[in-house]
Length: 118
Image (cartoon, rainbow, N blue to C red; front, side, top):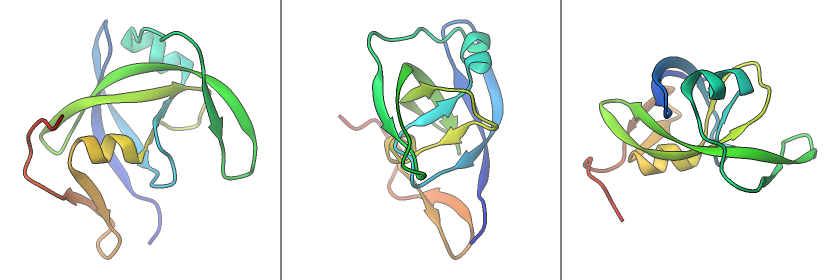
């Protein structure tokens, strides 16, 4: 299937920024760099989130909450903060927005009507 990228808008306390993100269906959370977190004015939340990686490595990472806008949908998502080559879009944000990856087309598409769900 190859890599799938999307253009998403991430909003923190200071500003919003449109970024190219790698869709990573093996990741639970968004991952953003320290630099991007600072630029957005992301407020670090208390504690750290235990995180494991595909190579077996484990780290406890700082985290924040961001607003994600993608495919004319908007919702909140947890983002872990770690130096990374590119921002990652994990499954939690896709599910919150009612989106999924269609492996036959390599595109993100709706799984349900858009609306807040509690």
